[in-house]
Image 1 (cartoon, rainbow, N blue to C red):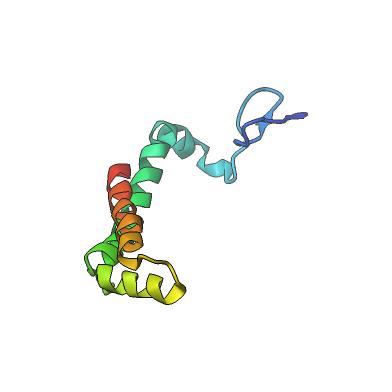
Image 2 (image 1 turned 135 degrees about the vertical axis):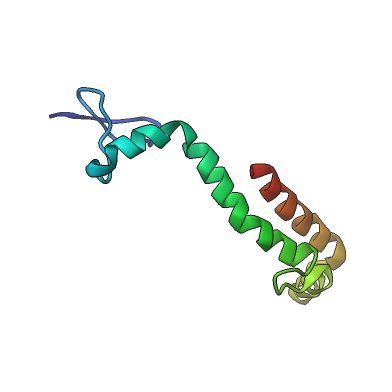
Length: 100
């Protein structure tokens, strides 16, 4: 069977138009969850990225908070360090929350 190239980098399609799955035995599950795939990806992304942003912004989950992030930026030579800490930490937390 001839394989067709997909210009968008998605799953390779066969000549009949059916998808070629990584695990063909899970084909029925792939088809059922296909409509929810981006919702799952966004939820998982938010689940992992919200704590990462809260470490930098609030000091939760063992993080150093804005003062620690600003100190790290000052050590690297980014001035004004507190400005850069707020600029990077805020969107990191809130963009993750918007993904959920």
